[in-house]
Image 1 (cartoon, one colour):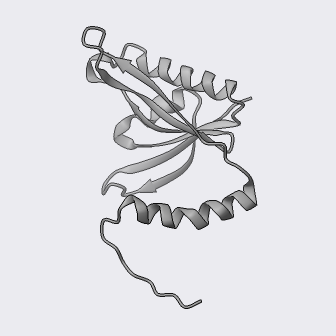
Image 2 (cartoon, one colour):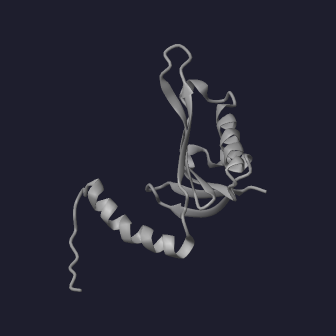
Length: 141
């Protein structure tokens, strides 16, 4: 097979899908079916019904990855974040997950997650510049 390498700026989803295809085939052969499942816990405005925040996660390979957690300013300090984490953890346990992991920045209160039993397993300095990105996990028993 003859190949060449090209750079594509702002590639579309079809390029991503093409790159993922051999990767997924390899991962499936090595680690089995990840059995992916997306979940969302949403915070709604009681009056308008509009979604104003929440948590979005994906379960794969028996780990839950919390991709997004956003609490609207007016709901902060009322236990909403703790409630979302507890609901996510309960869901992870129900689904037979080994643990939960996430990443967050220094300006997004990593200590909040640490207070809820998450431990740091990685840190990236200067991402974004003059800040840190933290990688945290919590094993479930």
